[in-house]
Image (cartoon, rainbow, N blue to C red; front, side):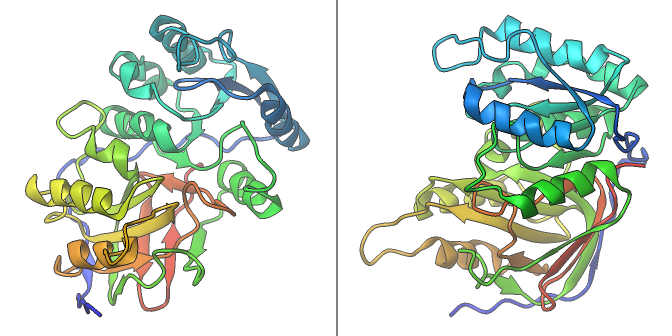
Amino acid sequence: MLIGTAGPAQAAPRDGRAPVRARALVPGDRVRVVSPGSAPDPALMERGTEILRGWGLEVELGEHVFARYGYLAGTDAQRLADVNAAFADPGVRGVFAARGGYGTQRIVDRMNVSALRRDPKVVVGFSDITSIHGRLWREARLVSFYGPMVNWTDSRTGPDSAEALRRAVMTTAPITIHRDPGETAAPVMVPGKATGRLLGGCLTLISTSLGAADAPDFDGAILFFEDVDEAPYSYDRMLTELRRVGVLGRVAGVVIGQITNSVGGPGEWDASAVLKDRLYDLGVPVLGGLRLGHGNGQLTVPLGARATIDAEAGTLTVEAGVR
């Protein structure tokens, strides 16, 4: 087994702008559901809106949530119009993605980020929504939330997932995520502690955003990544890319979420072995096995908030993402 070592690390971000937090959602707040990528399933959407309404929120749907254009939730113009309308509406206090899939990178460069600089809102989504999180952090320093979307599946995201999302967007309590021994990346660990802004998301979206306007500056950050349906060699390729462009040489630490449905060939490395090979020599703490991402029991974390990993203790602690 490969063994890594790391000492204490502390973030030293170059950008001095303070992070911006939206007000915590409260019962009676209006929230808007939009489809920046692929179209959701109406039945699963009904379940997701039921959960949000159960918290006392007033849920409304973007005009084109169920539109279809090929494999997209409507044309680029339709999806962008819904996102920008939600960002600009002063009565909307939260924006929830219906689902991920594909398509967000086609519109992310034309989002009206200035609206959220003037009026910060809670923004929630994961997977393909990684692009939106990156752009909002880079342009507005807005803390946003990597968590379940409204296209809700109870078998994957049960009561614990719902409560984790509610606590993240409706309370100002810090969030602590514990390593789950049952997760694929749980054996991946380099001892040490590190503090920095938690940034990242779906590894495919991180790697395909490099050089674009939705790529955050990871200097001194805690890099978080997860992904689904990628073979072990694909993780090797993406992490090697992050090494070659210098991203992994500048982070304060790495946390790994759910590595879901990663299947390799007979006699080849599995995903855990690839992660060890590509991360153990970085000289920073690494913590794998967190229930963040596409797997069962998905939890929620704020991206852009200050976070501390204690790899040996198996914990990621993140400041509240709302005020």
